[in-house]
Length: 146
Image 1 (tube, rainbow, N blue to C red):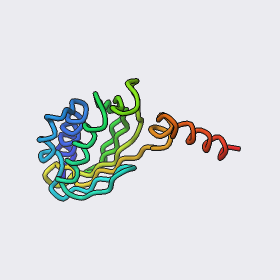
Image 2: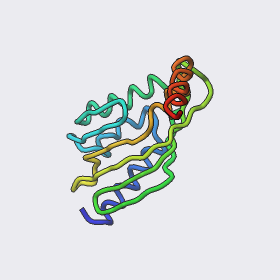
Image 3: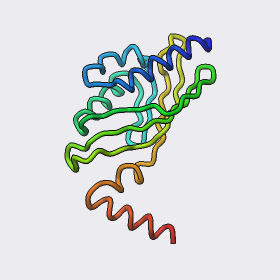
Image 4: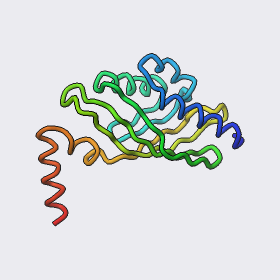
């Protein structure tokens, strides 16, 4: 895949994420390959249907999800993004939360994502912010630092 095609694919993907909505999930087939691999701290799946299910589940769990891509690096068919994900948990709090993370992507010959791997610290970015569990996680973190 040429650099121009990769750059266009990356721009399309960033636009998709920064404007994501429940209605936009129908566009996932234009962004991800049918057999794409997806991994984050909670999921490891292969295929468009399971990836779509992850995004649907996100909308069941959170309100007002929003991604802001802060860094883009492109090297051939591989890309690396850093991002901020803001949202409100439906069950625990109405206060906005932010997760900071990074993603490694690989594009196939058609410019669709064939590999998506998210990196972020679930303990620090999510669990420590939850009632009860957060108290335990912060205590454990403090104990481990001693």
